[in-house]
Image (cartoon, rainbow, N blue to C red; front, side, top):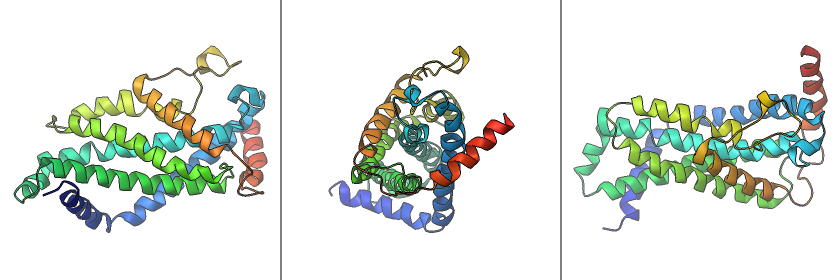
Length: 252
């Protein structure tokens, strides 16, 4: 029996379960980038751009931030899907015991779970790209290639974390992993190591290999986004930017 066809059965099982939760998942996938880009990209971006665009390599802050958050969000989704859900199927719900009682083997389970994680990351990155498009960030159809780039980033983390999950008996190990590894890249993967001219307490530093991986993915995504003319001549950031930015300066 080849690996791909049985692995597709594991994917099919996960899709059946996902039928009952997809609505809330899609809503969260849409609202998270929308709120984050509005608050951080437009609001905080107004303050940063007051120092000049040179601090972000010539990019408007929201355009610098968006591709990095896309890569980091996909990394976090893949990290979660390959941690507690995998441990639960091994230790608590015993799903894999039932699967292994069939002709499927361990390699089929691993392949199926990686296919499932690829599907989840593809959905999230596609929705995220749609939100970025609403903000007028993509400048080229090549931005569509950021989706497979984000999927590969997620799989790079997922395969390693799945291996780690198979060695665990409780979720305590994941607490350390999420605290010191997975939570760092979202705040640093889209940033330079140091924002020139910023106070020492605001300088950004790397967070090991996980941050480096997300930063490379962010760099590739940003290059794909930054070409040709804008897709929308009047993006919604043109409406929100002065209002949100001025309110933050006033409140500060």
